Image (cartoon, rainbow, N blue to C red; front, side, top):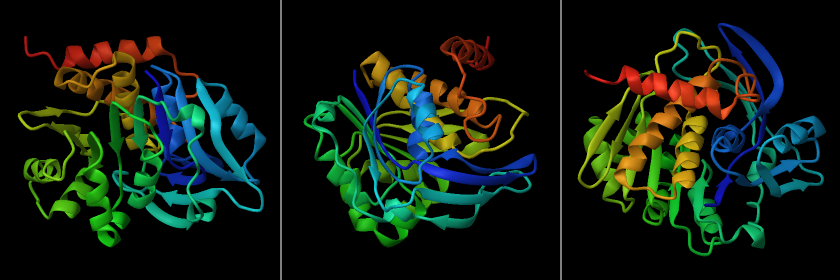
Length: 301
């Protein structure tokens, strides 16, 4: 099956208790793609400015990423984010952000991508998410992400988007903010009422919860002590989930549960280094071995 992602490509500067990096490749679509291409090729739809380094483009081209939907806008600048993590590194503090090209019109989906079966709408304005989704002929699986900004300022538009997608991947704070429910099970059920068939609620180091109309499934995080930089962990989780589902060609409950394992493992690799340092040369065999280790750790017998 064909997998399309639309989201941000950025230039990041990050500081954690383990060090810092300046002007490295980042963005939601980038972390997603590096996880998802372990399973299937990815069609990337995004925009960058004419300041986007050629070396970063080479990095993207080193994986199974179709860059036909990557638009370079003359006279525009690439999205930039500067962040800092402290203490337990559970949340990033945004030190500086320049939306640049992300504040402009959304990219167009190439005609050659319109037949995509599986679509992931990474975090952006919910109206733009619907605009991008409308350019796909008949996806069998569509999933979206969001953030607190849109929940606070564009709630009605976001709810409209939720009514059009198959699934939702939110973090726990977003789920609570959107629904007003402190209990995550109640929050997930409230999100299902908006129209999606399933909801995955990420809880950081405490794992993830899946809710469907008739099932609740909870999965812990992969146990690791080598946490260097959490940036991109949630996007890598989504990439592992969507890549696995696209490879399987189904999104029944059993596939969703297994996909969460693969997404969790994808995120566990990403956090072990800054930017793409850990995942750039990651192999499927390494992923499968960690998945096997993780599954064994979940057994009760």
